[in-house]
Figure 1 (cartoon, rainbow, N blue to C red):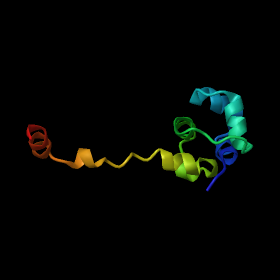
Figure 2 (cartoon, rainbow, N blue to C red; figure 1 turned 60 degrees about the vertical axis):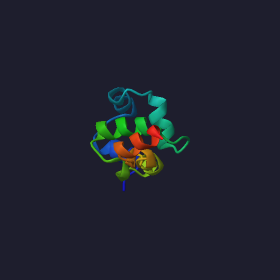
Figure 3 (cartoon, rainbow, N blue to C red; figure 1 turned 45 degrees about the vertical axis):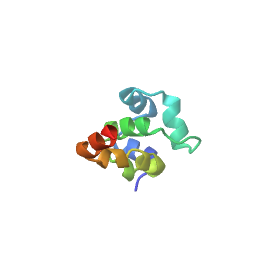
Figure 4 (tube, helix red, strand yellow; figure 1 turned 90 degrees about the vertical axis):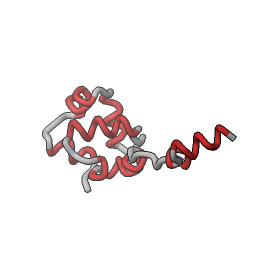
Length: 90
């Protein structure tokens, strides 16, 4: 597992270059690297795309990576159309 700083340095990018390519502020990258703030899932996703790594490979993105998983379908989504049609006809 890598830190964001290690992944960035492996790509020989400055914080500013990473931020520009990901469409975020340099201070955002800095705060994540320093542990002052955790990334929101969409920010983590953009940074990972630029660095060409999976969110689960970056230490600081552990929590954000779990948030990026697709939600499980609700019970209503699992019901068939005939069940729903029968429920509304009653």
